[in-house]
Image 1 (cartoon, rainbow, N blue to C red):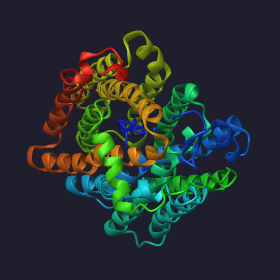
Image 2: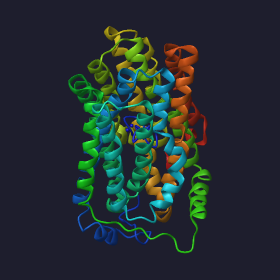
Image 3: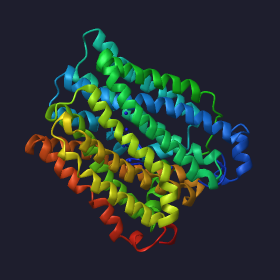
Length: 446
């Protein structure tokens, strides 16, 4: 429902739609060792084949979620006549689990077989989202039901993504991780581009509830595909309690000279990103007067920007350096985002589209680069907990950003709130520039 992955990894990815903007060679997940042969044996002996099945499942699910990014707020706005704060609260409900569950999710990923976890959580999302069009068809849909479905789906997504982040480094050699991460982010960008446009058409044809049924089915298809993957069975560290495991991951990230400032940057970026995502449908539908198809086209530009960022991320960081490349892309994207509030009607919605694309571009470049750094530099036995810690901190800002946007829009108006968020988008890049990371060409040399 996105980073960012994208959440753009909102910026763990700033992958997701933008939300919620993660290797050593062939890690043996079961033993926590760098052992390419054993990891590939546990992956069924065919890392490339495993990767593409993994990729296909994610692509199907992401396409459905991109439809939901449009359909869910439209369901609240047009069917249930939600207020500005209720719309923002709905966005926050889908993201609050990053704040509540990220840290324990890292421990869960070390205790539960990954395929079983992923399949089960996809089925949970299928049921939660599928209940909405069913309730609408029965004439029983309510705002609390919508809110509850967003909470359940968000919780399942947190557990799914943390576990999923340890799968890719287990079956892909370290030298290929940046390229594979670019493939994943690029594909996510394509689904972000086509999904909202498709969602706009589906909403026009079948209503928001019908479009949500598409996302529900996408999670069912994803579960079937994931069932074909090998079972990677993690072995939890012997004799260690969950709280101690969580503390180890926390200390590693918060004491790391590179990961800590990058995490602070991602947290600030995700806060603003979530605020923008919460304001976008509210502003474009109620202030600028866009219909569902026009809204889908504008939201699709987020995917265009993310696709462009994923296509050139490695080239940018090779030419400028990984540290300088993140900062340059982030500041350029923030500058373009200042175009978004110039939109006042459907006739000049291109300003919002350009700003949206630019912001996504900068987010994805940073997301791919920092995620690859964590995968290659984290000790294998700590990887899931490092990912959980980073997402707890950075993606935990998502619900706070959405709620802040709702309050600001209620008090000052939606247009003023949008200007405030877009102007503040330069802060994360300027922080990283002023941090120790900004004094070096590459992340690895800080």
